[in-house]
Image (cartoon, rainbow, N blue to C red; front, side):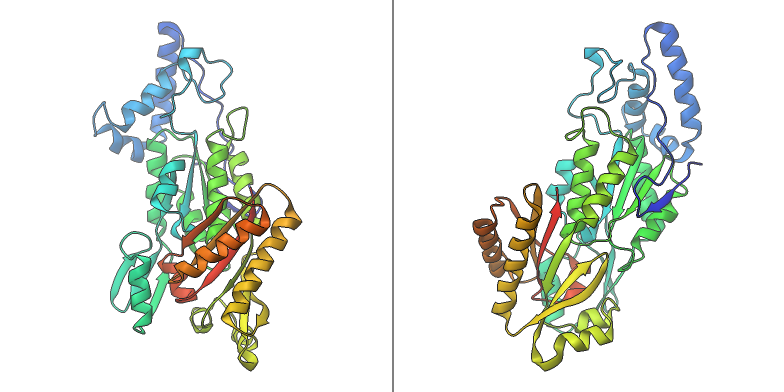
Length: 374
């Protein structure tokens, strides 16, 4: 069983095995086949189920890649006809959770697996990003319904890791929201212990767009877009950790009650944030939420978010990613994104609506800006 772990220093988990040697001629192919059988013995669950789908299913593609001359992205020993096609999945798969606020299109474009957190509204349970839309969440919160959330069970992550192995991945980088805000990263670490391949679990110390940007950066590296040779899981995990920890995020909410009730903001901080009727500007720093400063009006809060984002972009210089997030404030979010584009020099400012889990803790009316390293 490969060693696994949660990293606040990237690279926990087993080191990846050496690439499978290219098989040339019947002798090489026979040796490769025996090696493949040995590896299959270590993957009884995932490959056994895949084998029952038939030779044209997942296992056929996995064995075909093991025996079909063993070429991987950037393998200098592979002949030109052995090079992977655009449809070949990266050797390192990236998994994240639904608090990353990646859309299905985002996830599909980069081959990222998103494991949903659970949401409960009274006695009805939903999966974040699957069967509870932001509009429906706004209506529920506006009607005074109580929204509670919970982390996915380890089995949900175990299924994601097995699926990655069945697709031909050699390693997984599983990057998640701050462990100070949720037990999600610990559930991922438990699942990693029984995974059929090495899993590097990364606590991003972030959430929302900061987590999403960390997952996207990891997927870019895994895809080889930023490397001249095939990256390892350690390389990909280090990128996810660095980007997640580079997150600077500020946000304003209409009420601190949701955060206080959910235990994400202390009672003392909540009281400080609302003293004298001032509107708090909150920050997410090193995985924790705190009150950064206070302003008098919603418009002043929006102006302050703009100033903070532009100052952060200028401090860091080129090579940053910026996002604006909201729940039920699409017009205000678009206006804020336009202002940031016009004054920061960053052309691509992502605008996303937060999902049910973050929305349940932040409430309708939240507006946030996030800046990370690229």
